[in-house]
Length: 323
Ligand SMILES: NC(=O)c1ccc[n+]([C@@H]2O[C@H](COP(=O)([O-])OP(=O)(O)OC[C@H]3O[C@@H](n4cnc5c(N)ncnc54)[C@H](OP(=O)(O)O)[C@@H]3O)[C@@H](O)[C@H]2O)c1
Image (cartoon, rainbow, N blue to C red):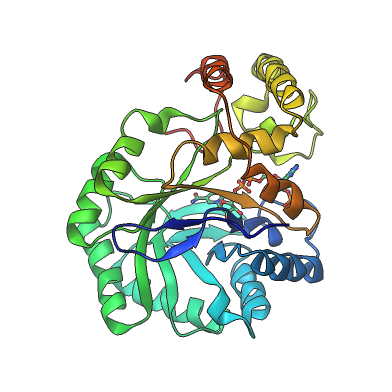
């Protein structure tokens, strides 16, 4: 396997791997089988071996389990890893209760994250969402104070609007925007992506496979205990329509001699030098396939076909990502 290219986070920001390792599914979050911790740690190690140094977590992933796991994995390899942490989402028994973005809460959260990770500074710290209960100025201002204290190196944001992004960037330079982006979810192309590009903010794009839709492995109906049954995209006629679109996607992947997942990652990667595909991988066997996806290039004709087939609105129904 080759080493991965680099991407710069913001103006004069750090260079990190152009492919990011999403660690969320290394902890139990939405139910399903308990992930294998030994394999998860081995996956982080093998990713680092191949130059994938951008590790993404949230303090609420597995109620802190994810940070503890990453802490174990990087114990002797801190200098090789770039740690990105989201905060502010409040869960109880796996149920979303809302956000807590109050300045005092943020100052409290970070100390727990640092302890669980076993590090002194978080490389990229991000409010997981924004809401109207706390002004953007106060949220970003508090994280900026943590930068001054040396507890945070760079500030990111996640799942916010173009207006919020501009406001946040006025308070303190924002290095990265973490956002769901795939051929199935392209609404951000209207306002948010142009704003990020204009402001020189890197885009950390997750859910490239659109909750597995673009892996080509889904069949209707989903199993009764599949969490995706809650999303209208995976229900009834929507799912049938969407799986028809995925057949076109699978055909293009086959013509390019790649897997549908590789095609999904490659499309995101091709959207710009400032855009990072952030991919969940909980087992080492995923790495060769997903690293190879970073080498896939498209002809203009292939790109046009994909963009037309998956124009905004072509995939029916939503997931938790709909804005
Ligand atoms: N900011 C936010 O609001 C937010 C929200 C969600 C996620 N995230 C971050 O973004 C990361 C990625 O998001 P995601 O997990 O929703 O989407 P994703 O990367 O599309 O992953 C979805 C699933 O694809 C599987 N997968 C990976 N490589 C594959 C391959 N080559 N073939 C078939 N399946 C493959 C993974 O399985 P395995 O795990 O079994 O390898 C995973 O369960 C997360 O880990 C998290 O760090 C951020």
